[in-house]
Image (tube, rainbow, N blue to C red; front, side, top):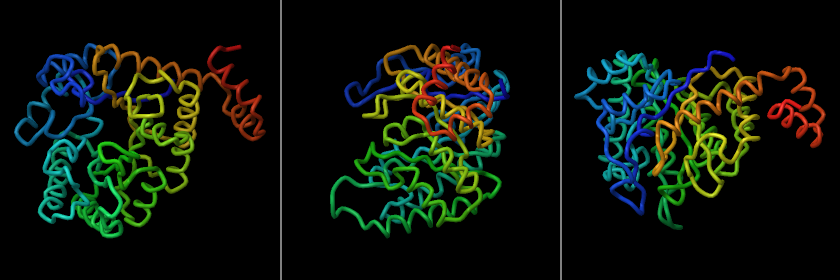
Length: 327
């Protein structure tokens, strides 16, 4: 096995609410308790922190002390542009200049916080930047505002990378940066070296994308893959299930293309085990990722390339069977 680094969003261990159970299905945990749970997994190299949920300007020293205590790296900080109700009608593309400026300042603030935590990556998910009805927004203006907002942030500190996370829908019915194609188009026009993409595997499945092809496209367009989020779903919603629950074969190809394209970033989980044990969900996802990595590593890369070059359905399934079952 290569030197993959495994991380998870810290929220996997806490209380999660949904639209049916606003209070959540579990008991709330303190940040100290969340870190203790992360250590109990036993397989983690790092953690991913939500801005305002886990990290803010007042507790930076405390969080840094906890990462040192448990020997965790900080894989990335996720800027909260989607829970704060002030961003309910948009953040980086808000038509309200004051709100848009607030979003830009929030990103810049967490860029500065990231530096203090020895982290060089922010995840930007503009989930509220979109619309729900026809004739509700000026599309070109919205995109111009997003270019301006992210451009300002990118120029704030060129040593901190910004990873744009796309999703086809939810919480808005239409999100501007919805697919890998739109994400790459955004980056192409923005033209900032420190702005790339977070590929959330579940978001890709939800958008009916082949995530292995997505990874290949990120490489094709110039090493735009900055970060990975791992989870699974049934293809109809962003279920955030344990890795491999429904897309085992697809995951094999995802792992192969991460290796082929030279991805060296974090293998980070973004899951919501609403009713289930977060420690167990985290542990099983990492174990599954390790098994999938071993399965791909067990095959001669030249053999895999030979199968791909033939374009044969039978040979492809034969390869998958041998990867999984070793016969």
